[in-house]
Image 1 (tube, rainbow, N blue to C red):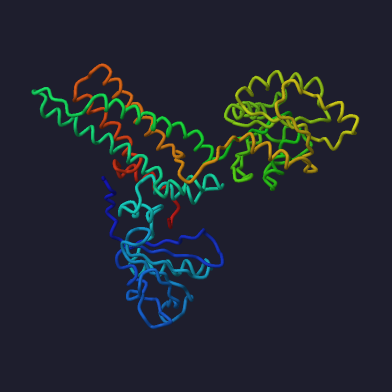
Image 2: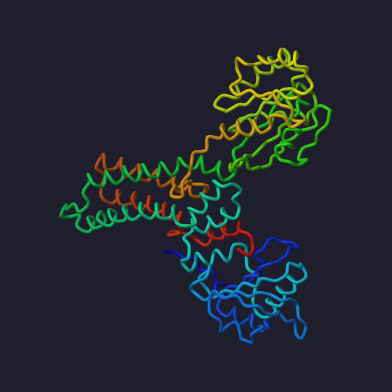
Amino acid sequence: MNRDTNPSINDIICAISTPPGMGAIAVVRLSGEGCIALVDTFFESSTNKSLAHQKPYTVHFGKIMEKDTVLDEVLATVFHAPHSFTGEESIEIACHGSVYIQQKLMELLIEAGARMAEAGEFTRRAFTHGKFDLSQAEAVADLIASTSATSHRVSLNQMRGGFTNKIAQLRDKLLQFASLIELELDFSEEDVEFANRETLMELTTHVQTEIERLAQSFSLGNVIKHGIPVAIIGETNAGKSTLLNLLLAEEKAIVSDIHGTTRDVIEDVINIQGISFRFIDTAGIRHTSDTIEMMGIKRTYQKIEQASIVLWVIDLTTADEKVKELAKTIVPKLKDKHSIFLFNKADLLSPEELLNKKNLLDDIATDRLFISAKRQESIQTLQTLLVKAAHIPSIGEADVIVTNVRHYQALTKALTAIIRVREGLDIGISHDFLAQDIRECMFHLGEISGHISTDEILGNIFSKFCIGK
């Protein structure tokens, strides 16, 4: 395995691992040989025992001393190598959440010989010391960023090695045959066959099926990770922004009686019944000569193309033949989308007027709902329709779902290589070309787990982590 060769791997690193700002407590983390002894230089234990002589996985109360002055009373947790997150000697200091205390504590650590950790360096060291493979390390970041029960479950499964085990099984099976075929090359003059071609064809069929299944799961995984895109469309002043603010429970979009207030796309993600939805408020659709507004309307149509679900908000107070004309433009763009027609401002109509509107667009609408965004009427019913439209299957703890675009790209390349192996077996290509294609498939599978890696790839991946993780 080509592990990281970071020249700073022997440094003692430190970082604040809790979110920036002031809170009840903050956690400062250190890792690297000698970090416990370093903290001992200004840690005054309540038992007068040094941290270096304490048992691992123990927590100790004491004071952080800045010369002769007490900076704070803290709890220090001790970890010995290799039984820590990074695989190195580590220590975590839980102090009070004052920004001043955090900054002073970091100054003390750096003055004593530690250095500020780079983004993702703790997880990178865990990878370096074999605590995680690369896909598991990436799952750590996904787990931290998870916003729904489903994304949490998928990330946790990957961090525990579900994806890793699947990739390892495929690589091991291919490795056995690659070794046999390369052995045939050593006896090429004797025309011997160590690798049974029928068995190899069965294996490549199995590998291709598994890789295809994993690659196809990315469309679901991408939705789970980033949220189901839901475009809110309609004419100007139909109540789209009011609906968005209501769903998000905050004033995200400007609400005004003036037509054309929303001129650009506004996005935000919320969780409904354990599923993440990415709502997109778009510019109102109407004929206009305003250049900026026209650009916003163009983006509206682009967002319709990108969305999985479309909420068409229709103002019931002005819904007439004009809406039917607009439908001729919008409905063709809703092909292959799950569309929900929301007839808004129902509270402004009398019972008789509402009855006359009941059949409006019923010949083209699949899901129809009469609502009042202003009075928050039928919003729970809308949320139920959204969850139903999401079509998120039940995902168990053992299910492997690809959520990372890097993994998807590697799987796609591995799939291309294994297809070439099958085609080569069909036409009886030479041993060396067959071995090359099998090795290429293994190479791309190895990129996922980090069996094949470069400092450039590792730097790109871990730079996206937060500092302190």
